[in-house]
Image (tube, rainbow, N blue to C red):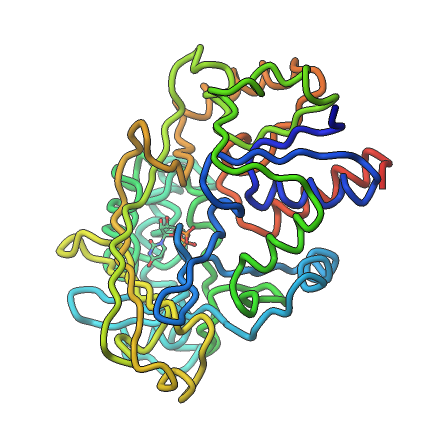
Length: 379
Ligand code: UDP
């Protein structure tokens, strides 16, 4: 008999197992995939850590979270500074003085502010005419953030590829996280702490799950564990929310990605970890060159080969890995109905991206588990 049966060994499940074990609880972690770690799982290819389910860059402003993760493995100094390729033109991201210089030729913050103000006029006037103060969808948000020129080259088509629908039909919050700044600073994040575990994320997961009983290749929903009360006092479920309730209200929608990964006999293919392809002309959204997450400067040339991955966004179909919740009106309403069922489940914790149907970064997932154990008074 276990105190906790934990379904899923991603960051939510693994962190939960760590806190529970520390509190003297007996846990069993079951995992559908043949490996632990959920979507942060890394695989070594040609001596390079490949983020098998898409690139994961750890960033947080929370000192407690940073201290927590760095006790298991040192983190390197990787700073995410993606580039955007629009029909062969290259722009720095996030939106900063470099981007403004590249698109408008302006070189001082005052010039950039004036130009941006002029670019934003169109949407400001439209919203004023319609008596609205906050952008109602991603298109209005994008135009309010950076104006027409940058919206069309760097946001519109990328977003439509990524989400498979017009920007007008998407919620504004998706791009609220993109910084706009008037300094020459290409750091994608504003957080104080950022990096990637040295040796890959598996080392973090191994630390979190050290001494915890784990079974891989066990699909909770189609196993004896479905009747979980026979095995444990409490259940922690990190799988898809609708699947737990047998999709009784219908399916929640997801976007997912198809990855095409190649090993190339060149030491440095694109000179950066992440290059976004923001035009419709190319059907992938990003090209990742994994070695740049862990090797910097001339150290890149220490390995004569490289691994690159193209990411193709696709709609989720049965049997695929769900990645991104599609938080539009229909799905949010459906999610609320499932959440009401979840709230009524006694002794079950629903946590993480899939079970909360939420577009989460890694750090807030860990923070949620930390808060759970603080609130529960069990730590
Ligand atoms: N985005 C964009 N152009 C870019 C990068 C991002 O329009 O070059 C928008 C897009 O709508 C995307 C959102 O910003 O879905 C969040 O992107 P981010 O790279 O932060 O998220 P990730 O896909 O890595 O979770």
